[in-house]
Image 1 (cartoon, protein in one colour):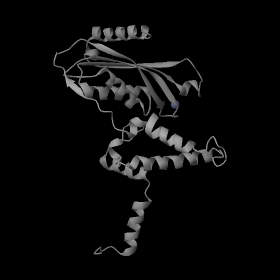
Image 2: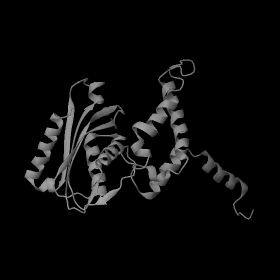
Image 3: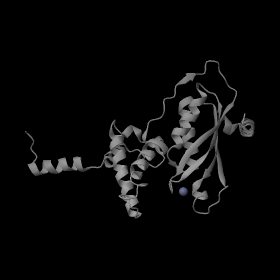
Image 4: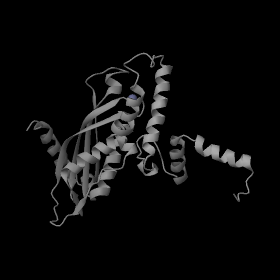
Length: 246
Ligand SMILES: [Zn+2]
């Protein structure tokens, strides 16, 4: 060994590395890059292969602590013995997979035929959870496109929407993030998105209003500047909602 560090310093340095939680290591990487890591941001690029499994174990141990703090007998109650592991898996690989996993691969193609008529896709089911309480938001989404230079397959809209919504969100921001991702993928001349969702924050807790839903929309490009195009988009969505069962 040619190290000039005294032995105890080496040990301290070593301890710092081995004692760090994987969540701290990932968090440090994101901070060093200067990027944001809010609940609705994707952080997959900062997680190395194999680390998600380690993170899964860390989250499970924290959920177990939560259950213990809720004074649930996780040692003897057979219903909750493996709840911590289940919740951890569910967060990282299912309901919040849009934070920890990369975007599904979407191939775009050149718009060789110069398609310029608008079309809508929907309803696409969207599932999310509110950032404030982590309870479900369930709804439907419609996407309207006036094609630009690139086109993507219809099913790809559902895949990207699922990836974006599978994070803790507030609905207003979810719609904006989905619009950003679709613009990146197919560079449309016009884009419109409508989301109608039920918030369990209002149904299950709080004011306990079971039938209230929230509708919001975003319009960009030609949909924003051309009023008749915007109306055509909303009209198509109305028809699509009415013919839902066909
Ligand atoms: Zn909430």
